[in-house]
Image (cartoon, rainbow, N blue to C red; front, side, top):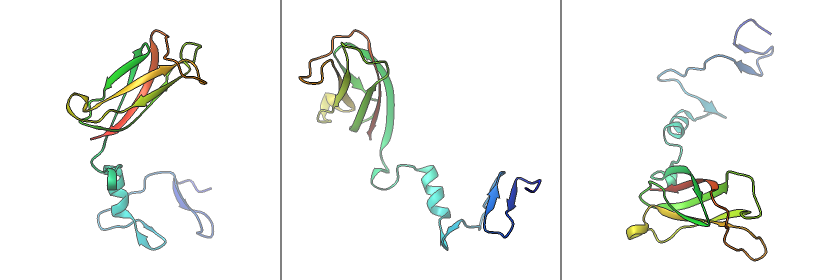
Length: 138
């Protein structure tokens, strides 16, 4: 192994970059002959490009009993997920999320419910159920 961070292995079939790879202005990163420089730069600056280009992410933690309404900080919620951020118990086995029509006072909000049985779901009764959530919206 050479005493440099960046080198070509013997025969040139593999390049090893252990330092910095700097593509200067006018340079290009090509894959199978196709320039990917602009695509890569756009993906780094706007990771939700395409159909989701205007979407934003919000996240948070809640502590509640039974049901809680979450104000996400988004203008509208398109999708949301929640998961227990604690061990399950007989009083709260899992959580679900529902998103109301995003109009009026419901804009930017969603509801998390805790459940304590799997066969016939019953509202959880555990005090201080801890969940983490992620919401996607505008």
